[in-house]
Image (cartoon, rainbow over all chains, first blue to last red; front, side, top):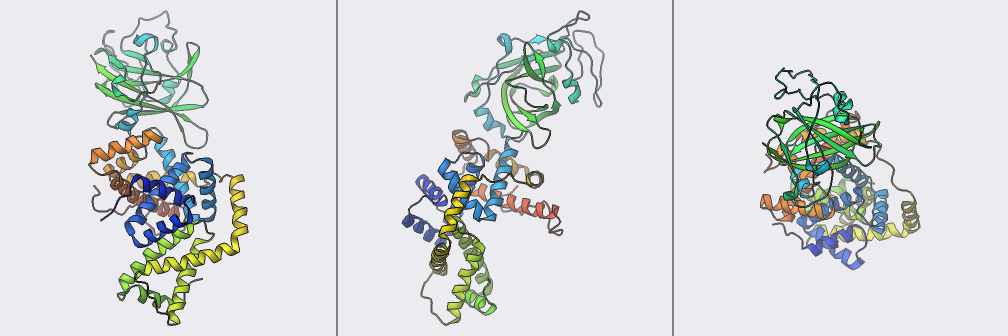
Length: 283
Length: 204
């Protein structure tokens, strides 16, 4: 039967792996793992923790220096470190994070300008696979684009420049989200979507616009993917920069959601930037 | 350096009278020796492992009687001596290596993209429940990570360390899959299954 180490043991194993345990204690650890397969497995599991800490930059300067000297002499450890780095980057990519856990540290959604929703003038933008249906103005629904170029070319209304022609269209509601950290899911700001709305535009303000394009991933609190958009471009609004994307209202039901915004690069993997959590309440 | 055939047979006979069990025991000890030399920061740990087996084999060949009841403990004793000898000759180089490590951060992984694709492929090959669990397990840093793991542990009704070992085993298999995938992609081992993961009891 496996004997699980006491938390003190874990610190000891870590110090052994990093070569900071006194010689006598190191020898004791070695005698034990040569005699006990379960203990050896504990040590291997701790090696994973050290590799992950190294990959995520969580080792102290001295620990890092020691670990890098081990890496230099072991091709196996170098491979494992490369794997840990890849796993870490994958975990940070949108659509891969465990959403329930992420919600524990979720970004609080703050509706811009006092939690109000605004009605946006929207033009019909049918796309392949979706059917555009003409309805009376109050109930008309503009099919929400799934194509990145549509989001990359925001409508005038979304830019805050409602054209003189045409009436406000209540089919798309716009929410501006802002990131903030909270550990309490009950702090999530409710996002009320009226029954008449068939599309929701989520605006994500940027602290800095440093990427040629962005991607977003929307997931439910249980981790189910709702949608992902790639190739979104930032645009100006109210003197700042933001990334906007649209979600068909039918894809949102009452509950908690998480948006992960990532910056795309011309080469290499995208970089997860910020998360926004919110609670949908459908009226 | 590898032990001669006769010496190797002597080692196996020393480990167990049943050749199959002896082979398993050999592999277990070999893995521990490899880690021992690695964690001690020895250069060329594989060579030192071979040297350890070679030395034990030669002693057995010469008729030495080993009184140690646990063969693994005996190998450990021999390995410590070999490490001391190794350090005797390499102490100066080791110090130079430490300085080098201080000055030169490791280069970027040149195979990152390939590794990432293989990782994604291998993850897809996992049963969805295991995949989700594995990805969830690695969410967060610091306190967030600890809290996350506590939550997973509680939701599974498994003690934290049992979960840790379970995740460790999953990760080993995932890493093996990625290595096979990369070898296949590089054309070094065309016959290797590219993205299969050996399942274990409890997999869904």
